[in-house]
Each structure stands twice: as C-alpha cells, then as structure tokens.
Image 1: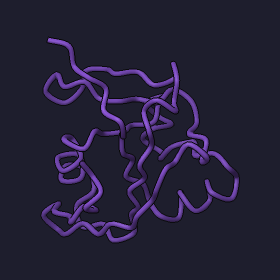
Image 2: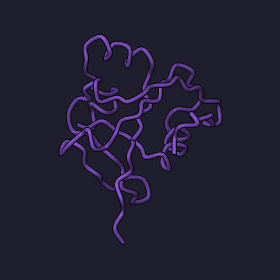
Image 3: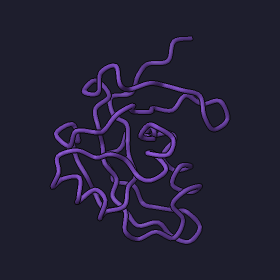
Length: 119
C-alpha cells in the first residue's frame, strides 16, 4: 500500500523562538531539533500525540503549517514513534515556506484545541 504525502506538515514551537526566526528569515529548530540534526514535524494525524507527549502544560507555543511540496529533498520521511513515518527536515526552515501560524495552548494533560483548518 502506497502512503500519499499529506499536503501539510506541522511544527509545534516556542513562540519566542519562532518570533526570532521571523526576524532572521530562517528557523534553525528547537534545541531538540538541533541536537537530533533535523527539524521534527508531525502530520495532522500525528499532531495530537506529539503535543500530548512533548508539550504538556505549555502556554507559549505556536503551530506552524508548511506545505510538504515546498520543502524539496531536504524533507525525509523516517520511522519514529511506533514505527510511524514522521517528516524530518534536514536543514533550516526558510520562513517564507511557512503557510500559516497560530498560537496554541496545551493543558497539563497534553490536550489542545487545534485550529479548525487542520485537515
């Protein structure tokens, strides 16, 4: 069975880090991204679990949507949590590739109301 690439992938990031990236024009990733050597993204289906596992009780976050077709060969799909293929961007994210950004708020149990435009 062939898995189709989704139109969008999503990055959860600290709002202040993303604001700095807007100033510079490029997002180098969060500390964990830089440590791992790539920027971690999630698909719409993977996003709730990513938020629950890694962003509990955070109120300073943004969610950025990026079209997969705009990232070219630097975007790799690699197995991670439970063997699922996750999108990883090798290199910095040019801010002009970000389609939209919205603030999100995650409760102490890792729940978050995601924007309606996530499909």
